[in-house]
Length: 309
Image: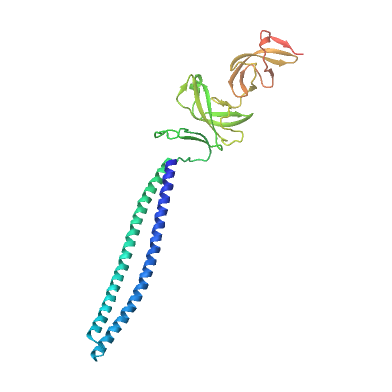
C-alpha cells in the first residue's frame, strides 16, 4: 500500500493548498471591498458637495451673478461624479462576483480532490488486512506486489494466550478414533485434559492428523510449535483392578508375569485388558494386593519360579 499512501498524502497536500488559496481570496476580497467602500464614501461626499455647488450656481444665475455656462459646468461636474459612483458600485459588484466565482471554482476542485481522496482511502482500507484477534505475526507473504486471489492466505497470526494441539497417528487406528474422544496431553511432566475437536479427512503416507482442543488452552507450559505427547482415550472402564505399566508386558492380552509370594517369584498366566497411559487393566490371573514384578523378565520367562534374595 506504499503507492496508495503516497497518493493520499499528495491529495491532502493539494486540498490544503486549495483551501489556503480560498482563504486568501476571502481575505483579498474583504480588503478590496473595504478599499472600494472607502472610495465610495469619499465619492458620495464629493457628489453632495457638487450638488450643493450646482444649486449655488443656479441661484447666482437667477440673480445674474453667474453665467449659464457656470451652471452648466457645475451640472457636468456633478454628473461626472455620479457616473464615477455608478462605475464604482458596478466595480464592487463585479469584484464580489469574480472572487465568488473563483472561490466556487476552488470549492469544486476541493470536492473533486476530496472524492479522489475518499477513493484512495477506500483502496487503502481494502488493501489493509486486519486480524480479528491479538497475537504475534508468524508468517506473511514476502513478495511485494504479488497477485493475491480471493481466499488465499496473506498472513498467519499466533494467539499466544490460547493454544490447540495437532497430533499425528497411524491410520491403522482410524476406526477407533472419532470427534469428542477425551485426550490427555503431557507437557513437561504435566498432564492437560482435552478432547478431539476435529479429524481432517486427508491421510498422508499412512499418517492421519487429529486436532485437539484443550480444557486449559492458556496453560503457562504451552508454547508455539512445542512437541508434546498426546494420549487419546478410546475406551474407559471404572472400578477395575489395575497394575502399573512396565516392560514386563507387551500389551493387552495373555501374559506370563511373575508374582512375588514369600521369598519366591512365581510365574502366573494373567490376562491384561485395556491399557491406559500409566496402567494396564487386570482381567484374570492376579488378585488384589499381590505384588507383581513389572521390570523386564524375558530372561527368566522359561522358568516356573525364581528364588528372591
